[in-house]
Length: 309
Image (cartoon, rainbow, N blue to C red; front, side):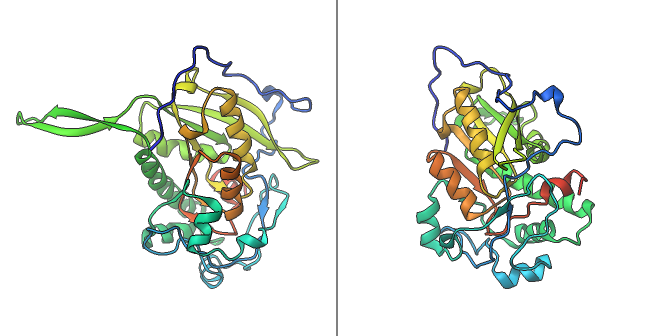
């Protein structure tokens, strides 16, 4: 459960553009400009991994399982996103991680949804290159909703008493105020509706990040948040964690606006071991919630969801 954040006396500047010497302003961005969905493409070799303790069965596909459900070469994921032009190769230490090894290398901050056949089917459809866009979006929205619901369980509640229509008292709980969402554009915007479906009045900020054409490194171009974000718990939304570079840059911007990593909950659908480990090594207090840890991430997600593949 996220810890309470003490409010500082003064608030850093907000709703501002993050300047860079070689960064254009958001007004100069064109509709056809590439937007970074993931810092790099994942071409890692497939290998069987196991979940952290406490899950029904592994959410990490074996090489044979992945070939069967995805119809892909075990050494590459179907991917056509031009913004992820780099190649990601999993470090040797990520190729064969057992239960205790995954927990030791990545840490308890990584939380996985309890695996079941429903979640596995949704993961399969999302990874299947032959799936129609309608089926893809339907499955993605369902999986997003499950992740969002579990993410809300990580937020603080307080006890309350209500009166039922029959006049009886009921001891229940309700959310503590002070939560918000932040989506990392573009693919993170796919998760906004799932959050609004659960929290109708929640405020949502945005961060725009693109990859540098020469260095392929993630660059922050624009950030706009609720003015009091430094007082809030933050649900950071980004569906695919490949290298983790995009999220790391986004968290740095949140820190500049007074947000502590301990109150950030990163909601994602798929993660590589390397991506999750990179984020937690950079920010040990952050919480990552995902459905699967696998050396190959479906980096086509953003393009297929928004119909630009």
